[in-house]
Amino acid sequence: MIRFSNLTISHAPDKRLLAGASAHIPAGSLCALIGRNGSGKSTLLRTLAGLSRPESGNILIADTDPYKTSPVKLAQTIAVVTTERIRVANLRCRDVVALGRAPFTNWIGRMRQDDIKWVDHALGLVGMAEFADRQLSSLSDGESQRIMLARALAQDTPVILLDEPTSFLDIPNRIQLINLLADLAHNHGKCILFSTHELDLAISSSDSLLLIDSAGIIHLPAPQMEDYLHANAIFS
Amino acid sequence: MSAFKLRIVFASLIAATLALMLLDIAIGAVDIPMSDVWKSLTGGNVDPSTSLIVRHIRLIKATVALLCGMALSVSGLQMQTLFRNPLAGPYVLGISSGASLGVAIMLLGSAWLGISSPLGIVTAAWIGAASVLLAISAVSTRIKDIMVLLILGIMLSSAISAIVQMLQYLSHEDALKSFVIWTMGSLGEVTGPQLAILAAAVSAGLLVAIATIKPLDILLLGEQYARTMGLNLRRSRMIIILSTTLLAGTVTAFCGPIGFIGLAMPHVARAITRRADHRVLLPASALVGAIVLIGCDLVSKLLVLPINSITALVGIPVVIWVVLSNKSFSA
Image (cartoon, rainbow over all chains, first blue to last red; front, top):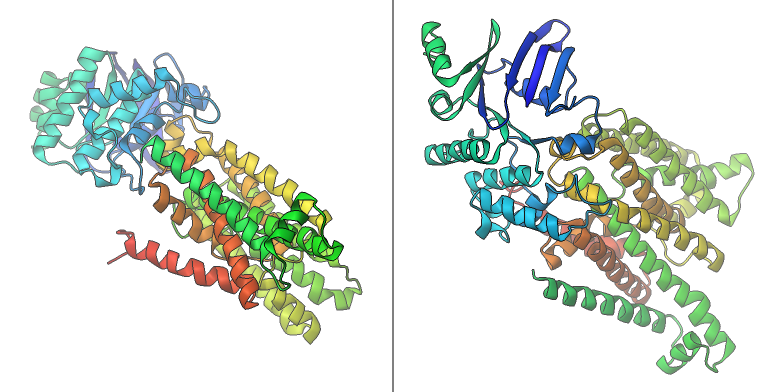
């Protein structure tokens, strides 16, 4: 579902983050992206999302090259959730999730019956149905993160990328969110890649882990990654 | 706010707009009974001079106030969402300074160039405003970070203001006075034929504004999210800037730089509707802008003061309220 090969990404001509990296993350699986600060986790996610062009290499997201497709088609293939906390006065949760339907609505953004159903469905999936008419600014960080995830789900994409979705959450909220992501991958067929510093949580809940370190990219199923990290004394 | 309540809000705003329009036409330097005002408007039998005052002076001025209020407020809303800044307004990209440069060259430089015509001011202001916005939109397609565009707009405005100051310093007293009066703004200088141009340009701007509703909604989440949601950022920016040029550029050309309507009235619309989506906020801002500018015109007629001082005194408390009630601004 997410497939890249020989991917080379640089910050500047002299600062190369990844060289010749390859990996394949199948549909219906949850993959955690780990690595030290500045190792290039966010940049890799941005590159996969079609937001910043790689120096070289091939990317195929659900059989689509993000750099050779229209913005709307891309938005129907990949949904992205960032750490950014949205602070807009009077913005209702329902309106935020409805924006996820933007790639499907007409020039003026008219919501059809089908779009409204999707919004309710997405709110239900993240367990925020009762919050539909609340204002986003009145929510806690954990609730707000769930609404942003619901917006990504309303986008109805096969692939979801999340940049450190757990970073501002307390421990119960972190566990809940990761379990929710695992549920979406396993029971709704999504391919989900999320970056995180929560190593234990990532190993216990994800199907595979993608490690960026000085050696490049290593993609292993969760149990093997745990052994690899111990064997190489990484993060220990 | 429920759909039903929203309908009531919009009905009240439209009723208030019409009522104030009528009041604005009824009140003026000459006392005209309400019955004669109505007869003049509906083509009844009245004294020709009364009919002339009502239809050719007051009706035009009230219509100008209506159009300018809507235009400035919608343009302010667009800039606030585009720059994600509650203190942005229609002039943030340098429209008013561009227009003032055009007028300054026209008024203050006409002595050297040896030309002057009444329509010249409007044309000069238009050319000034449009050239600044052309420059800004040409640059905007190459800029990634919208904040850079904001800073460029502010710097360009300041540079142009400096040039205008130089022109003022070098000019004769009469020309200087005409220029200063232009900067105070006026809704009463627009003639019948000019109103046709003003109305056409503002209507075009408002029509384009309808096409900005969806991009503006998506931009509420920021440009990063907007790109992942299928928004063509560059094209959307161009459409928004085009709409603002037509709206604020035209108003400034005909009426001078009228302050605070565009900055403050979208906030009043937010407070009234309690909504953030532009499908509601854009028409609400247009109506609130119209109501307040027509009201300001009434006050300025009663007190015989320039319109800009009235809009400032009305708008500034709103801006202060916005700043104080915004948690991210207060300490």
